Length: 267
Image (cartoon, rainbow, N blue to C red):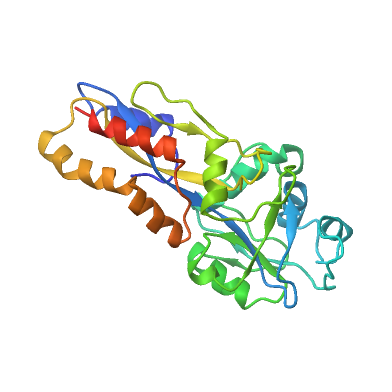
């Protein structure tokens, strides 16, 4: 299982284990990334991609900046310094966040996504596992992390995408983002090209997919008998609901059904 698309080198390595077939990627779940802030007295906040890029580049440094105020009309914002809490270790969470920014606002962020970032300004650089805890301890703190868990209690930012309403992170909004993408794999492969610049109503754009990597043909019979039931269970309605309860997104039903069908015919 992988939490990002295979690179060409990884695909070549996987192909060596599929002598009578080819490696295919099958989506198992949706991994949303939440933007979280610690602003006492502010329990709702909306930001768009250009503003997020400027915050995480250290170009917007106070929470009452005109650009932030324009996205939050009528909402009092404190004259508090922005403290960017940066996860500096390599992670899929960072890659997902920068894929969003590099697609939605390439002129403000840059066109190449990154798996790790350097600390911004005077804000702390921490490991990914310490992001939510550090934001909670930092007045004016902002960062990005998986929703739920230690991030519970922090204000999660709604993303203004150009849709009629800003979108909050959640299982349904993450699934709608996947729906706005397109399957680019062929045959049994169900690789999805996500549209990080989507303006679809209700689609939360900062998401990634988790995949199973298997051979379409030539699988070891005993191994296939062990892992196929597990993978089928992972994309069942019950397990997708359980994933949603733990802060993850859910696969769109049509995609989940296609995964189940493809698992059934693996050889």
